[in-house]
Every structure is written in C-alpha cells, then in structure tokens.
Amino acid sequence: MKKIALLLTLALAAQIAFAQSKNMNTARNHLNNYLNYDKAEGKTESLEKARTAIDAAVGEVTAMQQANDPKLKPKTVAKVYSYKAQIYGELAQLPNYELAGEAAKQAVDAAKTALSADKEESTLTNIQVLDAIRIKIFNAGIKGYESADYNTAYNSFKSATEISDILYANGLGGIDTSSIAMCAFSAQNAGKADEAMALYDRLIKLDYKDEQVYQQLAALYLAKGDDATAAKVIADGKAKFPNSNAFLISEINTLLKAGKQQDAIAKMEEAARLYPDNASLYFALGSTYEGLTGEGMQQKAESYYAKALEIKPDYFDALYNLGALFYNEAAEKIKQANELDLSKQKEYDKLSAAAKELFNKALPYFDKALAIDGNDLNTLIALKEIHANLGDTKKSNEYKARFDELKAKQ
Image (cartoon, rainbow, N blue to C red; front, side):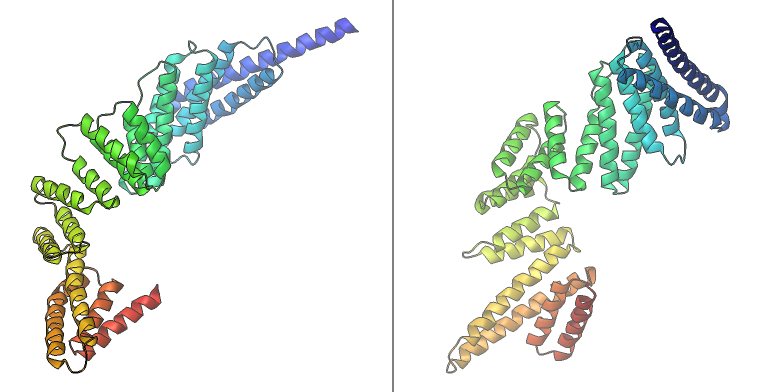
C-alpha cells in the first residue's frame, strides 16, 4: 500500500507539472498568434485566450509555491510571469479597454516577479513590456496634467516612476527623473504637499538640474510654517544656480512670512529692477508698504499699485487695493469728524470734504474692479458705502440689492 501511495503521489506531481507546462505553452501559442496575425487586424480573441491560459499557469505556480514543491525552478517561475507580463502588457495597450489600468498593474507586477525569480530569463522581453507600459502611463499623465486633472496625472506619473525604479533596481536602465518631476508638480497642484515635498527632495538628491524644484520645495515649507528649512532650500538653490535671479521671489516670500518687511522691500525693489514688467512685484511692494506705519508709507503704496496697473490695467487685486487704500483713508477722515465736538464745525466740514474727495478717488478703481469681476461681494459693499457717503442713495441701494442677491445664492 505504501508503494502504491507513493506511485500515486508521483503521478499527481507529474500531472501538475505537465498541466503547468501545457497552460504556459497554450498561453505562449495564443500570444504568438495574436502578435503575428490578430493584432494587425484588431482582433483580440487569441489574446483573451492567452490571458485565460496564463492565469491558469500562474495559479498552478502559486499552488506549487505554497506547497514548497522542490520541482518548481526559479527559471520556470520567471518564464510563466514573463509571459503574463507580455500578455497583460498587450491588454493594457488595447484602445478603449475598460480594464487597461488593472492590466497595466498586473503586467508590471508580473514583470517584477519574473525579474526577481530569475533576471536572466526573458530579460529583454520584460524590459520591453515595462517600458511600453511606462510610456503609455507617462503620456496619460501628461494628458491629465494638461487638462488640470492633477490627481489622475499624479497617479499616472507615480506608476511610471515605480516602473522606472523596477528597471533601475535590476540594472536595466536609468532613473526616470522626468516622471519624478512631473509627479512632484502634479502632487503639488493636487494638494498633496507631503508627497510633493518627498519627490522634490528626491530630485535634489538625484542632482536634478531645475531651479524650480528648489523654488517649489521652499514654497511648500513656507506654507507649512517651516521658515528655517525654506530658507535653507533657497540658499541651496542659490548655490546650485548662482547665476539665477529666480530665487529672489522665494527669498521675498520667506522674509514676508517672517515679518521682515524692510528686508523684503529691499529684495522686492531689487527684483523689480531685474523684472521691470512684473506687475506682481509692484503689487507686492504696494501691499507691503500699505502695511507699514510711518510718514510716506501710504504714498509709496499708492505709487506701486499705480505702477502695477500701468503694466497690467486689468489687474483686479491692484485695482481693488488702490480703491481700498483711498476708501480706508476716507473712512478714517469720517471717523475723526464724528469724534469732534459739535462746536468744531469748520474742522468737521474740512474732514468731511477730504473724505468726499478720497471716496471720489476710490470710486473709479472699484468700478473697474467690478467690471472685471461682477460677483465680488467686497467690491459691491465698497461701492454701496461710497455712494451712500456721496449722497447717491439710489446707486447705493442698487449695489446693496446686487450684493443681497449674490449673497443669497451662496
């Protein structure tokens, strides 16, 4: 009885090995039929048959692995998974294939398994499969990025990066820094700050030559409140790109966030000399001066806002801030007038006249701002108050009605 049992066991093992070989050969034959004939004609039946057969072969390999079958050789595992990588790689390339994303993942995992089992077995085939999928995924990422679908772009570039890393780990190519960079930009735009920072850090360690990497990383550290690290990243970037002026903006943001307005102003004025057509710089100077106290600060703010509008007449923020500058001055005059004793009529009239003049100066800027963005509630409030103070109740009520209507829709 023992001998019979032994013979039955051996027979069963032989059947398993034979079935595995048969399924693998069937998958290979259907794959070759697809590549040589059906693919050119757009037929997929042979490819689907290849998928069914290779799935069965993988299942048998898995069963032998779980049983710790000594007859299962690494070369066999590599060969089976190499065929799976090829078959699923072809499925991933099919136009309008609903499961293309899953097929690509399966192909990548299979190629990785094949390389891990025996790198020498069908290495070239695995490289071709992985690289074809990497290119397709990368292009999908570009499409997502260009259409502002940053989450899709991030996931695509992340997959492309992972494939590149698999190839590199097996000595089959260099690191794809383009995929890493696009993955970082996509992550940042998708609001994935931590992921973006890790990717930018990796690019810097890889000596990726793009100053934007340092600038964006510094901006992310600033947003997190880590001013010290942001300053270090900027310093490293300046050392890496000594002839670049682009780090001035990053330095300015660091100084402003640290509350060092005077130092920031010096840097901004330096940047304005280098980039005289940059309206944003003049706006930033105006905003910074407006936040400072002391003689002449408001006049400087006004001049820089005006300069920004010379460069960009439809600059909403500059229009609004310049209008608000005059509006706030007018409001302060009214406050001072209302605090006067009733016996000081002349001073009251003088302050009221000055306030009226300032409201009139503010009015055209708010009118232009509203023409650019007719739904801005703050602009509508300002116009309502200005016309009320100028005695035009009808217009004041019109702006109030527009404000109430828009507010009710929110």
